[in-house]
Length: 231
Figure (spheres, rainbow, N blue to C red):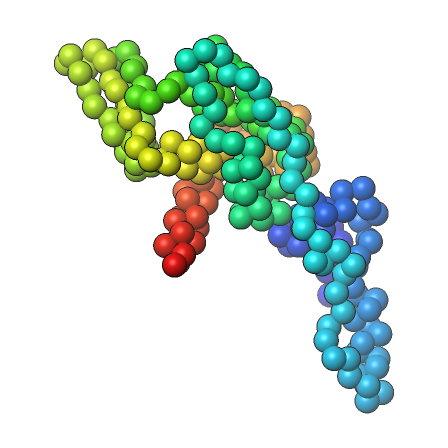
């Protein structure tokens, strides 16, 4: 049975819609061209190569990236160009449906340690971070410590757990924000995007977080594998 436009795999649908967001859904469908190619082949005429859509070589546009000025003592851990490069690296499936990414001016007033959030539909906020080393009151939860150390941070407790310092050597903080914060929020977005673009959460918080965690982990693994192959 022929596949309809609405049942195309996500990566094909995303690539088409990202490149031509306002085009009719059937535009660029190659089924007609392939039917002609089969008819020509049956008549003994073979094309040199398979036909391509008009936008096959066009670079996919990225969502709008807006940068706010962080308040004193804070900074943005990533630049606009680094966000754009990460989105291009992970492809159209991750870009599709994202309307805007904002490097916000202020941290989350309800949770200063929260580094990103998704505002449905399709708007991602990345909050500024304190300058390294971070000096935090109290102790971090074991899961949070493992997550930070896995990303390359050096976490130390002081005063019997009354204070915690988090130091980010080299580019580890940049990579953490790109891979564990931005792509985590993209993971939340993907659930919403492929469930009808609803303006409310379409899954339980626990399931939302589990999927976003798995997605971010897969992105980090792909990124580190690609970097390991670099000469």
